[in-house]
Length: 356
Image 1 (tube, one colour):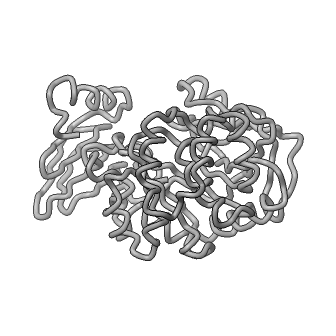
Image 2: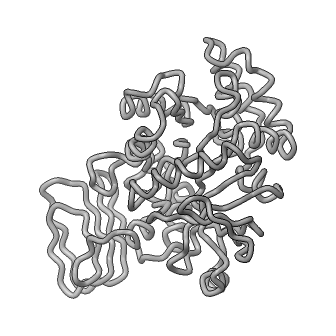
């Protein structure tokens, strides 16, 4: 899934080039390319589909030249994750109705690729023989308010190879700080990674039951997939399609959901703060510096980014701020999610939407 606009990484991530197409972490590969690399090692390239906005077709094609063009599925409108998954699933069904499917966001950080690959393979093998909807939950390390949570039934755990699997008790949306602290201390919650594994038949049955209009819309056109008429007809479906997440539309309603406990480091890398928390490259004063040249004095716990070559960033007596410099925007803002959200809201209100 590669259709998001990545607004929480503004001003580096913009509507024209969202974060999944950027190398924000400086490893030489964009988030999308890193996601592709992880799966290409365990799944044939011709079996990898990318669902994205029709505005990003050329970017995906350029960044992933090994992906067949017919495997780049284009959405004409933002409709959240359920229509995205329903579209891809319906198209897969025309070629491989017995498929086992992994659904993955394109912009996540994975610490140990080897551990990730082994777990995905194990989860796929197990899912292929069970009529369950599987997700992967990450053990929380802090009372994070930016992630969804999964409460699991601890007493009903089972082992699948080297991994632990639990029945899901409830999915919970992003909590406030006090509730997140309760979740962390209880030991009964995992972060919702947004990674899913299931048999095609199982997710189709769930979509048919809980989102019948969306299911019918994409499955009633099976004859046009992989033809020149596909895009025009899919565009019409998206125009009137309900916008709803797979979590709210299916996972929270189903009674056959299971969660694997992740064995790899993970972050959804959705915000500057998430990047800061995940990074191991902070200086002795807790500053995350992503700039060619920086001179700091009495400066602590800041996020400093500049993509301008040859520019020196100078900071003195500053703590807990974000200093983000791009070609056309300089943002200096406290490391506060609420204050950052207000900046994003003000862009349109104050006539600066051309910078979004």
